[in-house]
Length: 123
Image (cartoon, rainbow, N blue to C red; front, side, top):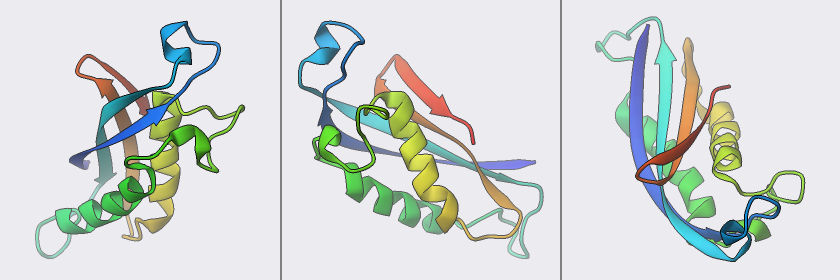
């Protein structure tokens, strides 16, 4: 099994309810995002997937959330608040359909809201 990981970041504001006094106030983070794809076989060029292809897909997803107030986006609502867990889930669900290489799957997405705290979604 091979894994490729790309990292990126985005900045956004959000507000969470029912999780604690500080997080209920409007605030922002500079999230670091890690996207991992995996597969069993390399192609004829000796790679699992071109890093440029993965980065391009990730860049498109980041454009939809970077410098936004996440609570106002259609995906996030009272049932799916913009927590780090749900941000990782959103990124994974948005990326899964566009990774079109046979034998390659999205393995996990991690959303770091600070240097020592992250949430990971594993499809």
